[in-house]
Length: 101
Image 1 (cartoon, one colour):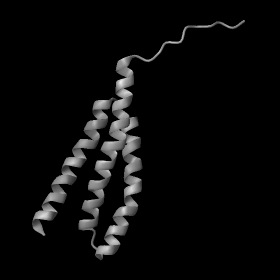
Image 2 (cartoon, rainbow, N blue to C red):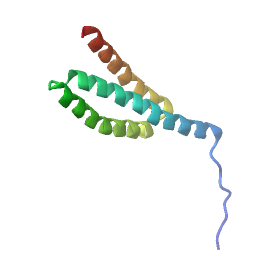
Image 3 (tube, rainbow, N blue to C red):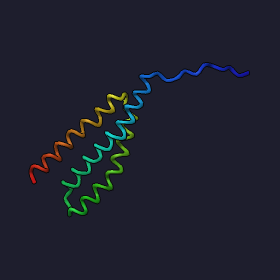
């Protein structure tokens, strides 16, 4: 009839990797999205109000892509690196825009 196989529970390392991805998706995705929004609002060639609204609307797509990237990455380290590298570039661009102003 039915064969009952023992169910293996996830290991602690697996659970921590999933937790790391969730934190990367929420916190890292938010940071990356905020930096993209700041840089886009600063550098888009339109009026200030239009640039802010456009950047804010784009932020929803950016956050969604960041979350998808985190869970599609090969490992949690790749997910963090994939968020950290563009975040550093965007932070530099935001800082340069602030210094130039």
